Length: 230
Image: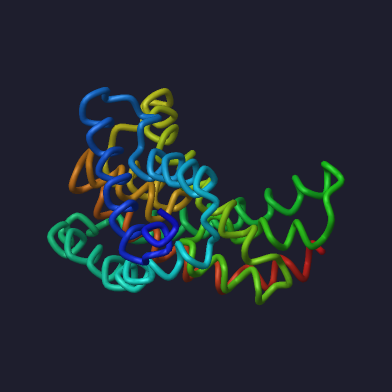
């Protein structure tokens, strides 16, 4: 049994099966909380803890999936290209919204930590949470945060946005797919974009665009805001 659990292929297959389980549960139940990423995290986390498998073994087995993340992110440009005509008259409002969103995201994270008595290091760790995980990890290290904790916070933000984002937008009667996509992609990055793509191709395309621009804008603005606020 130990030999089987130590094989890299075991955890690669387990990850794919866990994600597929999440897809099936979401399709059958139609419950927002059954997001495939969330289901996969719970199932794999329970399995790793139950069988006492260390992170290094899991990371070695799933390294190919990490490699594929790069091309997969670039591939998000395909649905955007198909919806490119919808950018006319929308580019300037979108950029203004994203800049304001990044400013609020970074500032609120820092201020909230300070108000709750958290350390400066924790504030730096939380500040890039709205960007996609690889970018947030790099930015956290750059501004003096804890990259591993930033990764956890980023994934948590993505899951919460994917689960609750569409519901919140519905409550505020935001039905325009471009606006919904910008809102979800700007705070929930790849996980939210996957949810947006499943709901509407236009919404998904603009969510992918917002994810990329949010990462770029955060990279530019975060050193300035951290220096001003901390």
